[in-house]
Image (cartoon, rainbow, N blue to C red):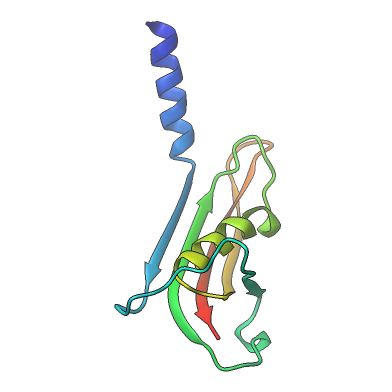
Amino acid sequence: MNKVLLVLVVSLALSGCVSTQVIPTSSAQVQPLSATQDVYVFLHESDVKVPFTVVGTIHHFDLGKYQRLDLNSVIPVVKDKARSLGANGVIIDKQEPVISGIFSRGIEVSARAIKF
């Protein structure tokens, strides 16, 4: 019984360490992209050289327990969430390290999902 309780407590604690929120900015029906379609990543709005529409925002927070995370660590998650909004690009608006322990470094990322 104690082992089951310990596993449950650890699972709940670890699941609270990572969160990703996706907020559509349009009420229009969107068609998600397939998993094989690429999503382009831009670090600045000025890097997007074509007209685009913002279709949503993505906020990812990961404490990185016992890890050292950087932007490259979370790009697959951000791309996947952008695909779910039908976006073929993301503009990274904010990326900040999160100190979550002596050796652990997490990351917080905010991005705009765009379609061009």
